[in-house]
Amino acid sequence: MSASISFMDPEVQLCPFKAYDEVRGPAKVYQDPATGWYYVTDYETVRKLSADAANLSSFTGVLMCKTKSAHQDEIDAIWQSEGFLPTPVLVVSDPPDHAFYRSFVDRSFSPARVKRMEEYLEGIVDDIIAEHGGRDVMEFRSDVATRLTLSVIADQLGMPRSDWKQLDEWSDAVMAHQDQSIPPEKEKALVHKICELHQYAARKAEEYRREPRECLLSDFANMEVDGRRLTMREFAAMVEQGLTGGKDTSASAMCSAMLRLCEDPALQERLRADPALIPPFFEEVLRIDSPVQGLFREARSDLEVGGTRIPRGSVVVLKWGAANRDPAMFPEPDQLKLDRTNTRRHLTFGYGPHACVGNLLARAEARILFTKLLANMKNFRLADGPESVKRVPHFFSYGPMALHVRYESLPGAAS
Ligand code: HEM
Image (tube, rainbow, N blue to C red; front, side, top):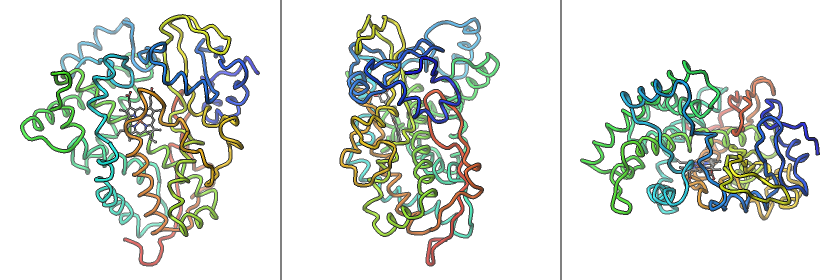
């Protein structure tokens, strides 16, 4: 094992898979020399620790600041005058609070609700495809994938779909604000932007309290759990997570799937001839190209993992993207195999109490999108060769950020 590998190295972040293979081994834990964080990369340990909320806290200070910075008073003044102060909910919360927040979203994307959404998702995809009918190149990430995920989220927030670009800006601001190394002036600009989202959500909360609807924001505004509703601080934080949880993640997975189709014309033909293979194809893409390569926990006490002592307060990184390529669980892990029997045991949606609430929605969106794309278009290929695929190094996200795809419409396709 090389002790010099750092998962903060932009080159490693762009393609971390070789590094995972190097650090995955009998020691079970790898301490990153740049951050001191402890990385777990083998399937069994990642799965076990993902479920261990008793020993590992999700409120780590990595995604959401825990300590007061020098300019915190100024930042807090903006939150208080224009929006609501941040508070840890859902993905950055711990028991018992986590169970309270989770109750608000547990049924939002239940199997029954996602089933009811199918016709509606088909309508959104039809509109997107119709717009591309007379053209021959698309920038798949923004024109198709983000457009689809944000249209759904816009409806969930009760916002006109035509305003999806506004939502895109707000969610980018929320994501950028998770990076704790941003300079104060940039942080202030981001906080102003996020407060616009808070104000929008607060107006909608009032509306849905008068007239409830079947959507996420109405649930957040009206549900009572343990005899109480969400406070406005909690409400704003839940809206931020609902917006960011389902946008870049799903869009990245769809882009990775499209990239794999562009690289393999025979695969396009196989899926077009047998659309029943589209779900196993997308499942393999989720496994191999996990959009969230890993997230963070904090040791609540001194821990011992595979012989390594992890001191209390240390950051532990659960690398789902590495677990998904552990050859002990998935033989020939770098190969996309449509007949793999255990693909769905991947950890792309996490595992345990924080496991993704939107996983069925993400899967349904992709299944419907690729079924219709393959039925209406053919010969997907990279418009300007591999250079046209834009990747951006990130400390936990993975996937093409821009993907220019050339295609031909099939005769009789929607236009
Ligand atoms: C391919 C798409 C997606 C991927 C890869 C993904 C990945 C994940 C992962 C790994 C977690 C676990 C976090 C942890 O254990 O710390 C998670 C949680 C979560 N996801 Fe997703 N997600 C996706 C789509 C969605 C969608 C579509 C939504 C909602 C519209 C969503 C909302 C959430 C929320 C609210 C949580 C927090 C759950 C909790 O802490 O209890 N995600 N997601």
